[in-house]
Image (cartoon, rainbow, N blue to C red; front, side, top):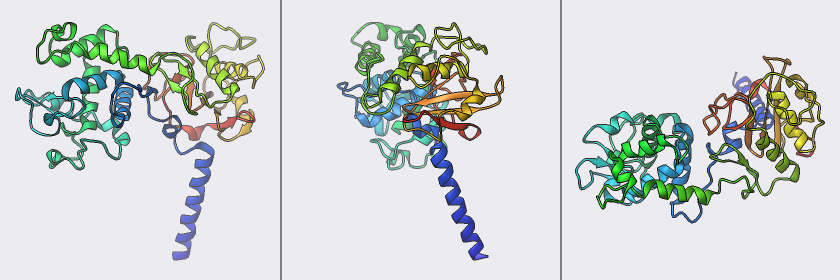
Length: 367
């Protein structure tokens, strides 16, 4: 029996290894932290916090630059003593993001961390796992003094109050007003201790440092920008850069299950014609679009270094095909998308999806 059990375990491990080699460990690891916002060099934001802002912003569909600016405003990135324990000098608010514990505001957002708990960093300055003020707080309840929990709560609160990923929208402006409790403190520097007049301007300046153009970004991973387009990585081969340019070119097109004679300059695109177009722009395809089932035989089997096509048949409404290009998903299906294009139909850059097992992975030769 012991020998049979050992054999079973060995086979299980080998089977898992094969699946990981074919499909990758997970689509989350392929694309990195959700949202695609890069760290704004020169901003003065402590780099340790940037992944937390990004994952919270990606899930709740707000701006990470706004989360950072509020964090700066409230406690100077958790450096104020009331961030770690107790309450502020007004006797009302506590934690890195200064939730009003006296009014019970934190209770409405103490569970906001749960959907993104998988992304909690191994360590950060105010970590509930080592913070004395978080002792006794149940693990499934957020601690107001924990950086990760508090930032997640702020992202949820802003979203519920109307904020979105734009730092210029009326909804985001109103949400900031609601956060501090007065538009007067947001719109003008009154000299009040609670003045928020620098929060939005500072966030907008930080966003500019991230460069929302579609120029090259360092490294080998494409970046999903706040405007919904993608920036190509500097290390990518020319063919991959052209594919990213091509995907950006059709990312404003609506979805329609219809094949035109060619992939060039069509008014609508479905999953297979958009995939055909992107490959054509990279010099890896002809001008006549294929259907999803045909892509199960495209190129070489398995995940590519730069480009992977995930396809399933049959051709028609029940088939589907989509792509990972330089670590970023391009897909007409908004399933599991929490990024800036999640409410858009048609071919768009999207955050990860996890149902890889139902698709056949293929890749262009050499990529």
